[in-house]
Length: 122
Image (cartoon, rainbow, N blue to C red; front, top):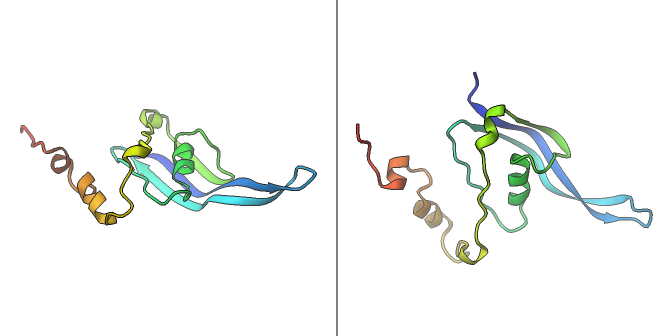
């Protein structure tokens, strides 16, 4: 059994930006363009980026709330325990602060014991 819970292969998500007088889409916004991603059992994914770069679109796609315009989005039956946690905009990251400082403060790259400050009982 594979430990891949979710896989995106060359995924594109487009939204209509402008329509002509007949209602036909004449321009599109490319929210995600050729994205490849695998999420394995036990992994935690954090999505960080500038406003408007596709973070919410990616999260909605991963949760099955949005279908890709092109490409493959495959979820296993075991991916049902996934959830999305929205950030409170009033407690968002300080844009004037150095980017890596946020990662270190959040424990990104640290082992679980280092992030939580716990040690193994065994």
